[in-house]
Image (cartoon, rainbow, N blue to C red; front, top):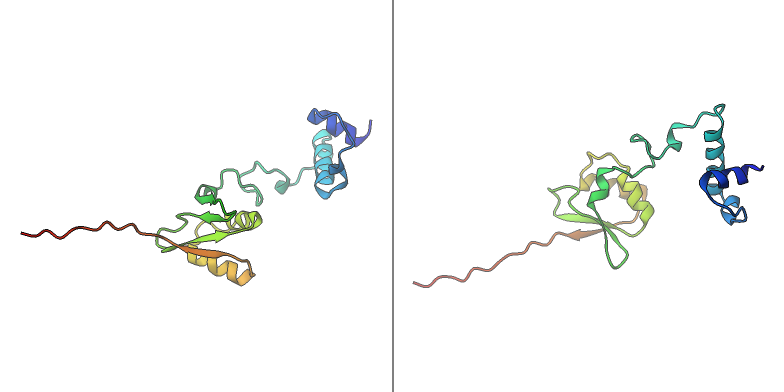
Length: 139
């Protein structure tokens, strides 16, 4: 049985004609399943996306709770830093993932500075403050 068919069987799939196997991701998936199957190969630390120290995994990343996907396709990071009077907005999902992998102790200002240094596009949005007007009392 070919490696591809073994992987498909292990995953409960039936067709081996999928073009995914000719991509880099498909190749990596096949390598990973082969490593699971044999005890000879050691699975590298960063291949496990469920580990908390994995540089790629977003599961459980506290930054994720600050992201809101807007109707215009932008992503906004809400309340990353309470002292900032503005919020970061980005267009690309890859930039969202990049920001989430930065040091969690960075302020919004430090993140913006870092993005500028790397040439990564972002926008800012000023926080709005809703003020209620009070009618003067005439005595």
